[in-house]
Length: 189
Ligand SMILES: Cc1cc2nc3c(=O)[nH]c(=O)nc-3n(C[C@H](O)[C@H](O)[C@H](O)COP(=O)(O)O)c2cc1C
Image (cartoon, rainbow, N blue to C red; front, side):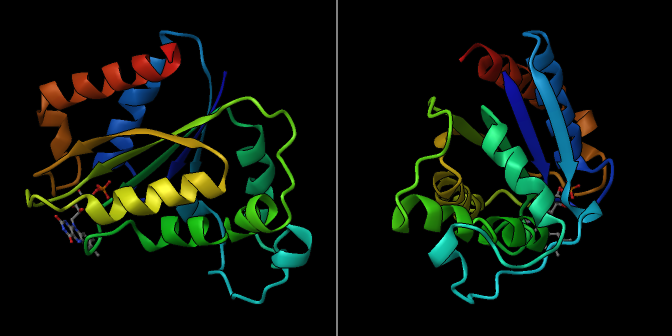
């Protein structure tokens, strides 16, 4: 099973990356083939709404996103990872998702099914400093609809509230174990 993990935080070794590493550890118990992409290392322009993809299903912008489209297509599981920034995902992850408008066009306008056709599942991993009831609502909706454009069924989220300082989640043994279990469930499911 091929698993693509998309890291949306610019903070190396930050809370969401620590959680994602634990999820990957859990998955590796089940021998998954995992690739991690740190979006901050890629040059990805925002979507320009030029409409080019409506005719071809491909994005006309020639930047690093072109390296990621084939990886999205060949993944069986996709994990979107982002801290909460102003009640949503980071600009890095949002630009990545917006550029998946090309895949939305391919699926819904051009009705071109992706090659392979087996059901695929996508997930969200997120963390936030505060504990508000609706803190993850925006990110969950963005992840769900982004994953749908990429042709993944939404399989759920691992969400951790109340972590701010870099690495603070390392002090939360229960959450780290919950992340490992989340990974095990992905590998088994
Ligand atoms: C620009 C920015 C905006 C943020 N906005 C929120 C927010 O709206 N709500 C919240 O609870 N935390 C917010 N945070 C805190 C982060 O979500 C929190 O520090 C998180 O643990 C960072 O994860 P990371 O270490 O993986 O980057 C914000 C942080 C930054 C830098």
